[in-house]
Image 1 (cartoon, rainbow, N blue to C red):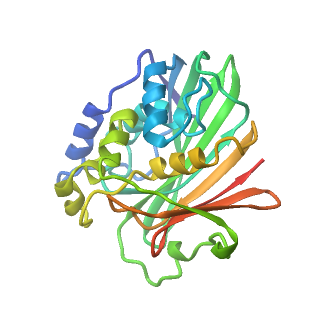
Image 2: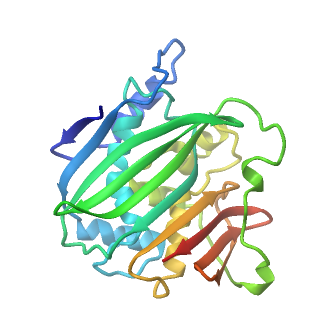
Length: 284
């Protein structure tokens, strides 16, 4: 039976990162299963100044309609609280965000109060370690209006061959797709951290990035997804599902190319340099 933990105020993320660091210490004991817990925060109000800052960082127009990726940011402190709990089976630091699927059931206005929930499900084996899904929902007056599922991977072994995650389906002939060069400055890592609360040092610090094997900071995956949707603003239906797979990290600064094309179901898109950083699809 799932235990519901209700919070009367949104938790901060600073303490969560401190708990995450402690969880890396040798001798830390962890459970072997995901906790049967759902974190809930009801009546969440949107701060319009924060929404505007988020829109600017990600490239969205300034409107009162929430971008599809914005509830993910609102619920991020709940996710941090859940994943840094002592009974969570995998340490937060070192988790790799490999996929994200968002379903927008209807447009959400900034004036609406949201009931947010987060829970972890389906801990399972992966070719390179262990993975699980983080399911997040947003409801208004008891009706679900938004849902997200993120898959996270804890890498414990090297890939056996290039045929694993890197060989998943990608958009096809990019010569038939419209393309745009993005100029992504180094500050995007820190700017997105400020509006999202995700202050993982691999995005904001050269030293932090190097500790995890990157020559310089990398862009947040959810920033690349948000920026991709911002590039498609005005061409999306009121209700849709957008799914992405995060590929190669985007080292900052960068000049990747964004491509998109229509499909019978909706759209497909990708962000790539010499190799893909993100591939995705949209279906109504």
